[in-house]
Length: 161
Image 1 (spheres, one colour):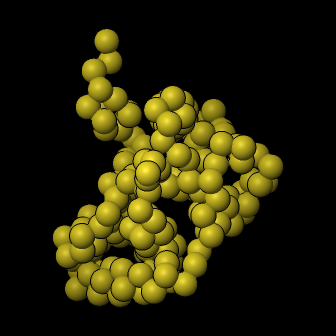
Image 2 (image 1 turned 90 degrees about the vertical axis):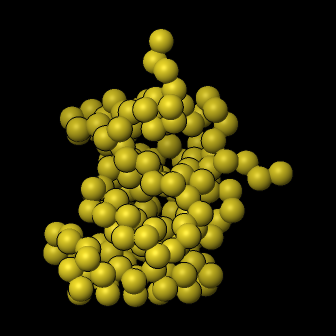
């Protein structure tokens, strides 16, 4: 039996752990919702590496996380997705701020796409969402992008009574 899971990106953890960040309350609410609903919280080793630039690994809620290593099948899919994203940017079909993050976006997307239990990818990164939207125009991606700026009730169609 495959249980639902969400891949959480670096920005999610930064917002969850720092009350001064925009969307901190949304991050807490998503975190609580996923735990209550039995949706597994997955963190990529890629996100851990990014997080450790600004934080310490001990700050992460490791007891509630499944750690996902970046493997060979993820690398192969990353190349396919990154090629599409870079070509879209070259053709001006993808307008993102000049950044080197596209490779990390596509690495995380490849993990979410390949891992059968991951149905969601949660991020606060609007630029990452642009990359996802371009990729999903030509690729059948096996996960849904959740924007942290949108409350979980709206994202999942839950009435907040």
